[in-house]
Length: 282
Image 1 (cartoon, rainbow, N blue to C red):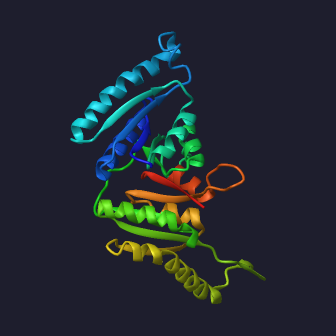
Image 2 (cartoon, rainbow, N blue to C red):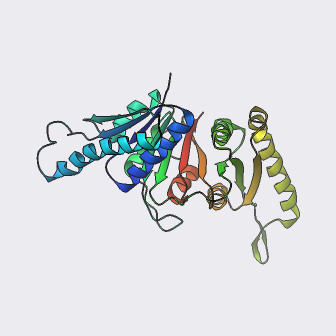
Image 3 (cartoon, helix red, strand yellow):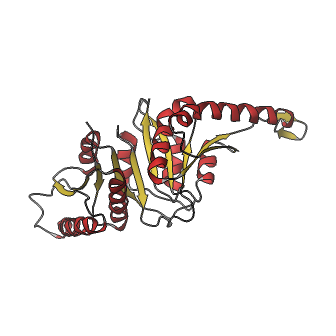
């Protein structure tokens, strides 16, 4: 049975932010936290050369970070582990034993050419456990907490369930977002949106979204779950709606031909400033 939360630490600012977020989440859930530092040559080469210096420092820092977290969250069980393994392989191997994997990501935020760390992307694309990517520059929460979740259709049940369960823990509102696009048609002036059909199309989209969230509403009656449809496509809609979110939840289909993030999840982890949870689902 999966238990606890696992997070990766390499001494960077983004990994320290991820560990801090993971500790708060573990305390909220009442589960232990496991901090992993992995490097293929951690054993034999640890004392040799400048390449090993960052890893020697990270090992020392991880113990200090763990102690600070125990002080900040009394009663939280924190364990640290050093593994002589590739970080992606180590985290993917640990993921099924845990309820959540939390990793750091780096970048400029917004649409300014953000780069997410390769370890975070690889784990998020392949893990069978939900993965959270946390920035070291994430804005501090302001006002009532809100979780934004991207909803494609009724296949998003697992994604909505995660968002609502998290909202119950945090006392947060859930905003379920679905992006859609008008189908243009040709006129003498060029391609034009079918204005006469747009209202009908929007009504259909709203009805489908309400149908998709109905099971989550029934399962979590105490959660304030609101729906929102936006024209402009799914990725654009989610990133726009998540501008002031405290947490963003997206789905990833597990059975793609090759392990990868879909376009919506890819946009979220690259452009949303809040922590992003990638939830695998059928």
